[in-house]
Length: 450
Ligand SMILES: CO[C@H](O)c1c[n+]2c([nH]1)[C@H](O)[C@@H](O)[C@H](O)[C@H]2CO
View 1 (cartoon, rainbow, N blue to C red):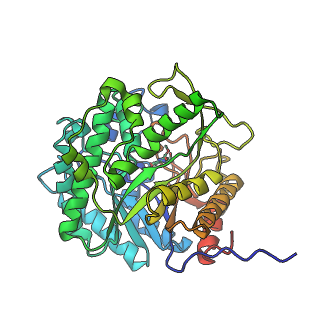
View 2: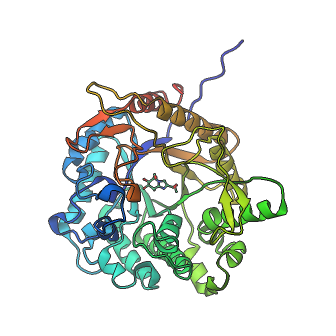
View 3: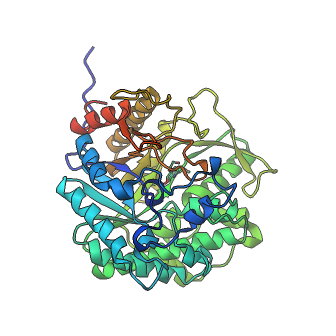
């Protein structure tokens, strides 16, 4: 029997890891930085598991030089990270904190000196608390506040940063921070959630518009996509699946790419769904250079009239492996997602900006490598899924594993470990897991080692 041809990716394919500022940096108030809503949220008793905060986390703010060297040792040719808005603009607007800007400039310079392309996210959930005090994502003015901050970053770094992202996963901010109250700033209000979502997208549009005035490189939007599969072909389950897909997967992609919202959102939000001015949608729909897709899992959906606000719930798929977060491991969902974007939105350039898993990692044992076979299997199957979608015509330009390090997993605190590098939070020792070695071989062979 002939061996299958080795999987090979394009020579200019980006291979990276992804992180975010609040999750790995620590020192949230150092050198003049202003607090974020996540600093406030994690210091509010009962909001984060085990009372964990990111005051130290991976201490990347002080260990960034050796961390870049570790990325280089893995053979990454790209690294996706976010800027803490409050480090650069402590009050969110106005006064610039030079030390904050300098930190990110030095990080970018070191990455480039090691042949690593930075992909920079401007907002990964850590809104300056001073802006939350002025209404935050509920205040329409935030579009201009965000554009002002973005312009500061573009002017300082666009001569070295080739890939910009405005927002990371606006859905998580609106759903977690304003609908269900489980993430910062912790509101639970169906009238606030669509407004926060809309203002997030207006901010995205205003920042892209600002970029086009001076920028010379690429800018995109990162969305989380969780493909929805009807539990049955009943009308009720199919309608519930359409609502779930509109609420998570289309509510952000479609205003950005098409300049319109899915009709199903009127049904989901009811009287809470505002009539938005056409000018808002024109602002949101700015030409983009790429879409970033964060993929982890899928959802099998059935109708559930008791479930708020979607009247839909997910059906556990006991036949498959699940992560510590309860997410099903389903690599076919990534193929389906990438082909869906290709077919529905005109095959835009796509980067997989996050993909990874948190399994129970055994207690750290002394020794060079921590065995994490489930994560190796997850990465192998999902990177293969990316290649499958590319062979079927999807325009995929890169892949970023989530995450480089175990890090602060938001309301889960440090209880969930997504890293390919183990983090000992007492000693801050970094230890490569077998998944890091595996990923390094995949990169070195441009896929042949899968
Ligand atoms: C709802 O799942 C999302 O796609 C998603 C998963 N994740 C994310 N978004 C965030 O972008 C990261 O900050 C998380 O650490 C990471 C792991 O939970």
